[in-house]
Amino acid sequence: MTAPGQKIIITGASSGIGRALALEYAGRGATLGLMARRGDLLTQLASSLPVRSYAYVVDVTDAHSLAVAAADFTARVGCPDIVIANAGVSAGTLTGNPEDNAVFKEVISTNVIGMMLTFQPFVETMRRERSGVLVGIASVAGFRGLPGAAAYSASKAASISYLESLRVELRGSGVSVVTICPGYVATPLTAKNPYRMPFLMDAAVAASKMAAAIDTRKRFYVLPWQMALVGWMLRRLPRPLYDLLFAHAPRKPRRPPS
Image (tube, rainbow, N blue to C red; front, side):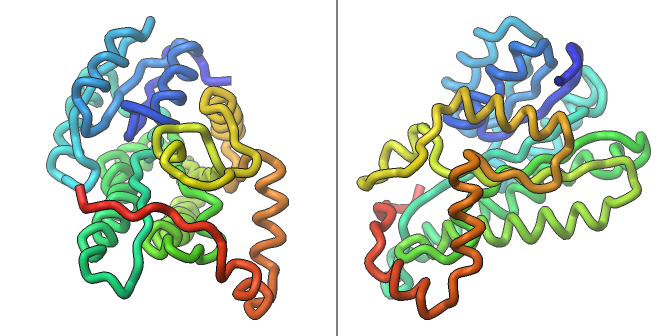
């Protein structure tokens, strides 16, 4: 279990999985650096927690803002023990619609580049200290390409590969890299899905399970276990059979770019 006094950075902390993780680690007595775009929700959360919490209103695609926030947190409490790159966006996209181009770029930029930029300010310090855990929240949506969710599936597949590359790069350095692939978790994002979501998890339960995986520095963790089994099978389906089964699968709703 996370030791009281550990220092933890969480992006996308204002709602959903990020908020649930903040509550989980606050219950463990950690010192938190909370980052998100929505300042009102972020400040409200930070002020409600019974631990030292520092709120940073940043967009994870903005390298400069992330670096400034990272430097401030480190100056106040030291290099974090755990950095959780959780910030992400989700939306349906269709390649044939040019109006989806901006959304496609936003999804890829936030979910992939934003993860890298979140880790960047801390990697060399963690290397020097030969300690620390970098955690990336990916998704089972990255296991296979889902129709109507090309940007989201591509971003999560890229996140999984990026985290694996980083893990191998840092092997032997004392710095661990943990890839977490949730299935459906009850959050404001999934609430917009107009279809049944199998094995839907409560966010607090999911956060507790993720924290346990981080404690043991699991290289790759899928939750819940039922979705881990489904994911294992999906990755092994022959392409012709996968195409047949998923051609008419329900699709994520599209939206205008933010």
